[in-house]
Amino acid sequence: IITKNNLVLRDMDILAPMAEKNLAMVNISLNTLDEAFRRKLEPRTASVEGRLRAIEELSAAGIPVNVLMAPLIPGINGHEVLALMEEVSKRGAQSAGYIILRLNGSLKEMFSIWLETHYPDRKEKVLNQVSDAHGGQVNDNRFGKRMKGEGKLVEQINQSYCLGTRKFFKDNKIIELTSSHFQRSSSQTRLF
Image (tube, rainbow, N blue to C red; front, top):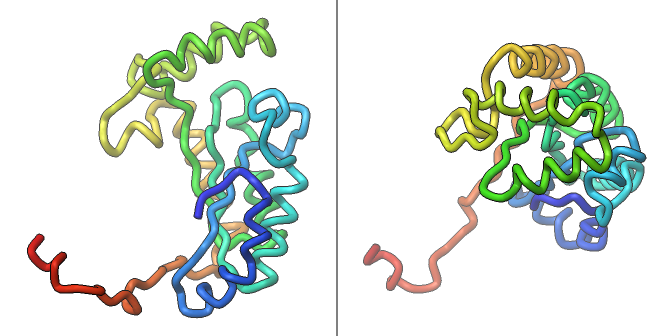
């Protein structure tokens, strides 16, 4: 499960027995510890504290939690990687990952308007940094590059991420789910 919401807590009675058999985990998307920024970027999602509480409660129930720091926006929240990793590890997350912002299709136009509304003083700088992170394009479709990006700013973010992994998640096992309990209900699908 991947979610930006703490409503996943309603399903703990289902997820906990599944997690005991390595059948379920929850990915919580959390890209900031700054509630004011969260309200600007994701106004209709759970609060920062709500998501942190969800990480804590799921972890306490034995349900593995990975935190997805996404999107990381160079010039806006890219500097928060270490602080995020420290806080979510304290709350019980077993791992974390990140995705650098990319702007597909009409998202560049929408994001430009959002920047103009909330960060007009940084608009051009942020757009240039997003472009630099994707080989000169704000939209990057290259497999292996499109989510992680490239360039100096991305290297800095990745260095922070690697440091955070060593510092806050070094003793954690990689979460591996199993499909060994799955049984086909009919032989029909064996044709494919």
